[in-house]
Length: 55
View (cartoon, rainbow, N blue to C red):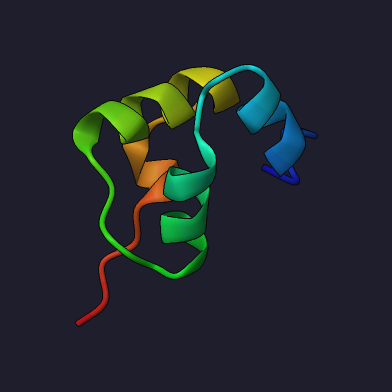
């Protein structure tokens, strides 16, 4: 988000995310594929730019 100059407020304002989903992301909880798709579209990136798998 920092690289793209997009704030949490902008994601909420543009209805990319709601408060509950934003809170889940902050707490490293699961999100849906639809949410991932919306984030990718808003940030003009791919899921690989957002998702990180830990061993």
